[in-house]
Length: 276
Image 1 (tube, rainbow, N blue to C red):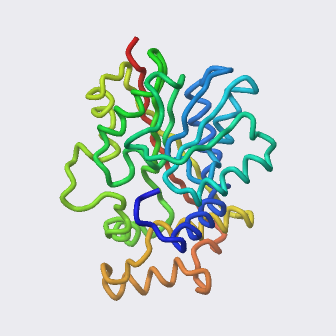
Image 2: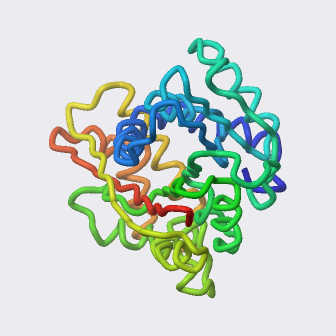
């Protein structure tokens, strides 16, 4: 969680995380499966938020393994511990408050480290964060970072979606003037510069189509709210009117109500090995 967030921000994030999870979870599960985390291994979920991914990470490592979730927000960790307790996994998943840029762990503590929508995605210089993840992983262990990388949510309206994605909200967390090498899709270079071996990348796609379940409909509505908040000042009057017509649930032309609705999105994962 970024420094400086207020309690209302946290409440909003928690709500959005829960509502959007049915859309995101299958993609995140596929990415975790691709890593082939060893059974019985011990790993770190850096920037764990409310713990939803820690539950997924605990599955492949099994009862003999352990996942430690770390987040800067004690408020998030309250939710995370509650979620894990209700799942009956408190002995296999633990949480600790801490800063990803200064991990409160000794060198070579974990067999692997994972960070989704955090390391490399937050507007902080990424290379030191990747190095910090590598520091706490044992030689031969793996480091993986994952982040949202693209979407097509407004089928049939590519110009409007392109304009929305060119707004400050649409390109967030990146900002104008940021060096190209600091963009998340340049992460292979960070892994090489951090001394990680066998750097690799892979993209995972998720989709949704009509007829939408109630859960997926709610998740997509939440996604519209998260992707393009406060865009009115950066759009023409015509584009703003079209955005309201298509993207507001109360509109009679709300795009999710279209009988042929289809959307997809991608997460991209970068991973590498700590030198032995």
